[in-house]
Image (cartoon, rainbow, N blue to C red; front, side, top):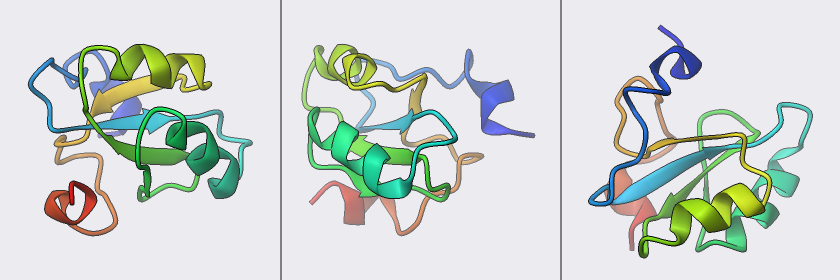
Length: 91
């Protein structure tokens, strides 16, 4: 099952520890991370055009959308495998 198919069920909740931001697939990993850094300390995800960002408050999803994210998922969604563990992301 793909992450896109899980998008409605895996949307970030206010209590999500991290948010997986998916950017346009033609963006490089550097473009995605730079955009996500505008919303918080971003870490690479398992796909190059995505980033994992700590959920620092209720405005984090809006900041990620403004930075160009097309899809936001809970960073704790198991089907969206990440590089490293969630605890490594949320230092």
